[in-house]
Image 1 (cartoon, rainbow over the protein chains, first blue to last red):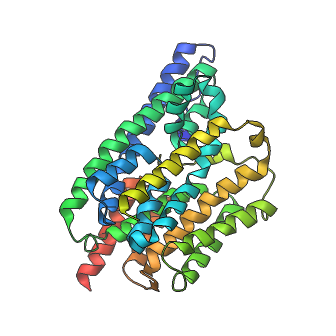
Image 2: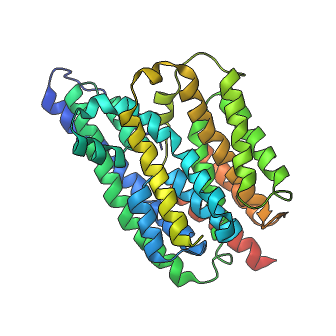
Image 3: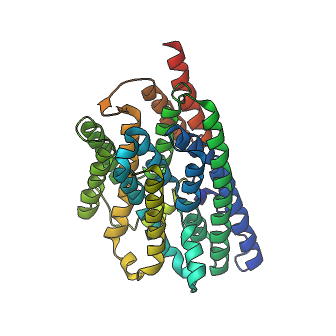
Amino acid sequence: MTSASLAVPATHPDDEAVQQRLAIREGAAVGLATAAYGVSFGALSVAAGLDIWQTSFISIVMFSGGSQFALVGVLAAGGVAAGPAAIASAALLGVRNGIYGMRTAPIIGQGAWKRLAASWITIDESTAVALAQPTPRSRRVGFWVTGLAVFIGWNITTLVGAVIGDALGDTRAYGLDAAAAAAFVGLLWPRLKRMQAVAVAVAAAVVAATLTPILMPGLPVLVAALVAVVVGLFNWLGGSTDTSAASARSGLGP
Amino acid sequence: MTVWQIIILASIAVLALKLAGYLVPPALLQRPTPSRIADLLTVALLAALIAVQTLGSGQALTVDARIPAVIVAAGLFAIKTPFIVVVLVAALVAAGLRALT
């Protein structure tokens, strides 16, 4: 799901109230859509061996879908021994939120507490909806409504998923390991619009699979990340376009 | 490390990165290389996680019901099926194949 597709061009560009209403509607729709798959995070996290409290803690404090799925994915494969690699994977997937923050900071304005709260809910969805709005006020409204809607929905459904996962027992028999892989496919899919991204994805997958029998769990994923650094640094197969806004718009998950 | 230490450290790291975006001078954003690397980093990590989650079994590579499930998932995402539906179908495919074999 791309939130850009929900951005309805306003018929009266001067009507501030209309713009704000559209921003609120778009934010609420994105929040609902995102909340739906908090269930899968909750269930997968419990399947990885975390308890319900730990699962909810991650959704409340970390609150970034890609990083959350990566953390529990690496822990599922390597257990606590893979802890450092799990932390590094989650952090590296969170780097893009920092880039989003640079774009949303002017929308939020000054004030330490306001910025702290805003940074917490700076994710793919809130950034995408905010940047898609036409006026400064509708951008601000879009950011806060989307961020809060996703935050509330995501945390409720995480808890629901964790309770369901807890009740399931043997999660492999229910195919939850395949569901985890499918969840990563869903997060990756909207980002494969350019040749450079496709090439990086294929190379990273090959590197990670090749290194799996050699390195301890978690490390193959981190080494595969180097593919992105090298290709990005020299801009192989790339144009000269600015990619971070497009990335926010194609994002999935908080 | 305990599970709690791991999730607290990881959560602080991700939260700190979000906050960092509000603290750095916006001039950094004008340079295309940092945003391009951040963008491709997300792609590389997700692709690597797909490979490990689909083929990995501890430190071994195995071929099992996850592979057809992931192929079905990719096909469904290609025709714009909602996320939660695809994840459920992938689980059903893997569970079904395991029940049959």
